[in-house]
Length: 580
Image (cartoon, rainbow, N blue to C red; front, side):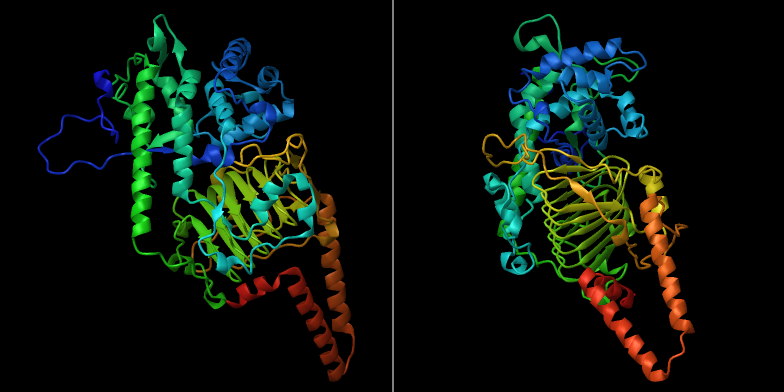
């Protein structure tokens, strides 16, 4: 083994010779990037290659030849038409591939990340990023596990409904969703699962980035520093909350390279062995931490936030065991998080029931999993939102893109720059234009790059009813069945959602109205409702009634309003306003 491989498994960036100190810096471990595995998988059969790199290598070579012959594109980039030709998919699916890669890419300066909605198909993607994206389409997600507190969720988890008889061939998929004891896998379990996948497939992945040179055996494939950086799509060195270290700076092969001179490519086999050592060390660390946690004191369960205590600061004293970026187990309550309450750029809302959840902050990613009978407001999400295994939930989201999987009887009020994706076994979904605002909304939209003049809420794309990325077996013949699409909310049933002024006493913004323009039919319905309300108010004001009749009218209006509050679920908003 060459000297460059004689490194400890816990790799650290190359530094000068150590001095006589009694302490050494803590080891820096390798981690999988969660984003491609959580938001970058598409249930499109023609994108899934199960023979490793065997089929992808000729596709890579064809794409590289097309990239060199396509005018107007930078070297090694391909656009929609080239992807359509090489993968034999539709132009719409090719565009979807580019949009998905842009949403999970590790380099924010890449042209496809910066491209406007109408330009992204022509801007295209880097061939090597596309190869890594295509390879991980074979990844199988970790199955949900038993909930840590199954008794506590038994009375709020979605119950079996009439839809469970639909598509009986898909019983395993329905079982995962309807089982009242299921919970999202822990972050440690998911990270170990992703690392194990990369460990198994690392040789094939490196072969897609490597170049052939004259030589025998393993020495005939070499990897340049530039190609190694593309692996940043899948892995990184560093700890949560700290700056991520570029792979080439952490690799012993390139750490001391002269920035003025191109680094000499190294054998791919050396890189393979070095990465395997680091992955093995990371897996060992995860196992040791899990063992220590199991043997340590039991953490307290999540506490509901009392309705009277809901405020902008209440979340600070009620952290979730998963960390400050997760909101878990809220039941029959309201919960709010503002920018100062969130560490990092991602949020997960997990197993919340009969509640209103406000996440009024600029984010990159958001996930809503296993919620029921709740209203969830997501501020501005610049990369991707995923809603999964939810029932009777209202989601209000301003985002670049959204994916909805295995949901029932939910309504989505959307301000999205890309077409919503519907995957898995969905039933009775509805979509509507965005219907709310808060004072800092426009500032948050600008911060994460969402254009409120572009809203594709009404153009959902329905993909396969079976998700090939889950770990379940599915009967033959159902993989090509398309999932049920979503219907638009009737304009006469469309209402605005009022967000309480959670920013009171803090820096507020200039947003005074919904920044996403309403379609004509919804705007006309809203104007009719306002006109009708004014006419009713004037009639009541001008009608001469004695005191007893006034009390009767007031009582009747109060009863009708109360009935509507409970029937619509808006009683929760009233509680929030009372608690301000």
